[in-house]
Image 1 (spheres, rainbow, N blue to C red):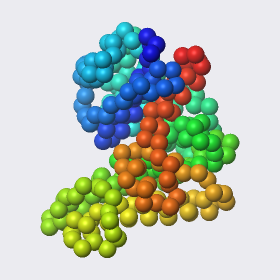
Image 2: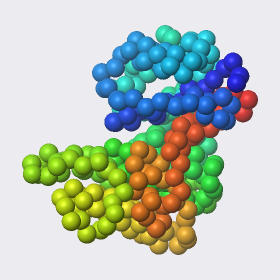
Image 3: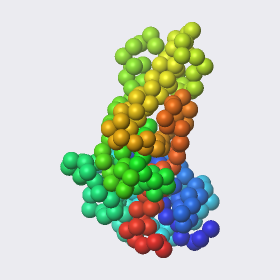
Image 4: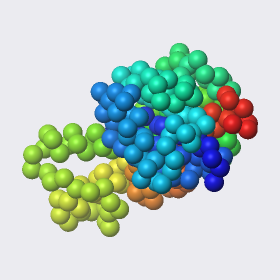
Length: 264
């Protein structure tokens, strides 16, 4: 392992996912809950403790840089302050000012979430285009990349977590269930019925959206899935069997190398 690592942060509405890269290889990763009021000092302490758990040197000494994408505006200031105070400014926060090397055909381009663009870049680099990225996060997003790497747009729907939480909160007689692979579509118990409805329902949503997008593109675009529940849902789909759980972190590392230079 080299002395200098790259830290990538995907700051989502529900979780913050972190990965440490030694060159192009991610050597370890972490996931923590998103706290919108987190300060720069709290972020520094958390990252320091995560590095200690992984038996890595202190971030201030072993990091060559940090790259982050955030969809939580209230945390952007804390992230920048953390970079200035604890990382000697070695921070790249991906936003509309960063040259990503792709044409964004969204209207307006700056309205696209940074995480969606990062996913598109990673998917095109790893798997080529045209392709469709399905990200199971707080929202389930579908992002479409052309055969030349252009970002074409996509679709956004309520995510699995917030959808099921709304159901359990508003239907008091329904029990909370784990999101696991169902055994049958016809549930014989309330728990089995819920599991079937959630897993098969979201799997069918994926297949339906992919088929519609492919029809509009006029080609059998590849599908790459990522996000917390991608493994569970995509096993039950016919169109999204390729799962890359660390796609966003890989994309952040790619952007760092593009902006800072191939040797960085």
